[in-house]
Image 1 (tube, one colour):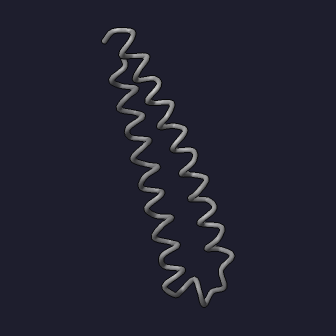
Image 2 (cartoon, rainbow, N blue to C red):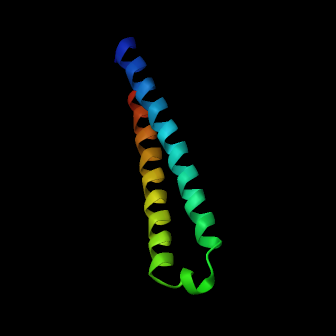
Length: 76
């Protein structure tokens, strides 16, 4: 791989890491919102939706981490 493509990959990796950070922040905010809900709401539809959103964001963070790792391996 030439230097130009490595540089492009590095830029993509940086963007992905920034997006990962934003997702982690949103996930933490959602988890905090869930924790601050009364128990009656946590066990209801709204609480379940909040937990599902947190779980999906966690999956997205993991996927981004995998993508970053693949990019790093490709740039070797």
